Length: 112
Length: 112
Image (tube, rainbow over all chains, first blue to last red; front, side, top):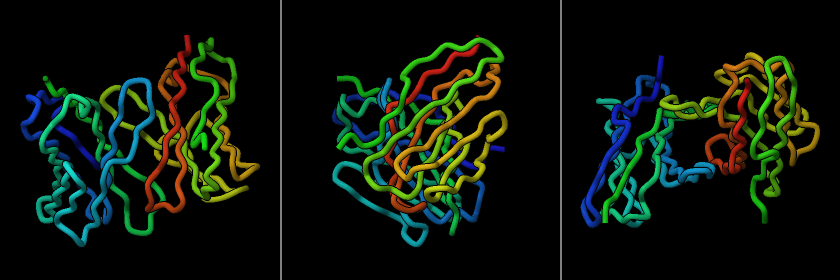
């Protein structure tokens, strides 16, 4: 049973446009969410996070939105750049937990 | 600062062979983790450690053992490798369970 799901395996966007990556979760005990970005042959790198007490967190071109009632979060990248082409993973952390639960990832391709 | 390093980068094993993957971090982090990444499955936690001398099971611990004899090192062992353990293995470390995890570059393991 996947507690964190990224239903779109891939997404293609034109450079300069908005990229929206979606993530759904089932575990209501998650109280912290993180997004990681992964280039081929490298380890994932942290991108942005959000606490469950917030509904939005912004960092430059990256904004994460959280809808707790729908158990849904999304990552917006505006404007998208070719260097953003990577696999993006969302992850949830339970209250007082030690383990991140990752989604399956979405491959973003930004075309010049 | 090297961050998180992993050795080896690649390895091919025959079924039944054993091996140890080494993870080292120079950030003085308390928490260390071992994940495996399989297509469409995201990253799944194998084992983790909350400090020197401690280890705990993650989501998929069967067939693996770990040791944390020194704070900076976290070893992952496969006693009798199976083809189902063919995967890319990532090590990560963090200051606390809720803080950003820093990942190593990964080890690609193939079990024939």
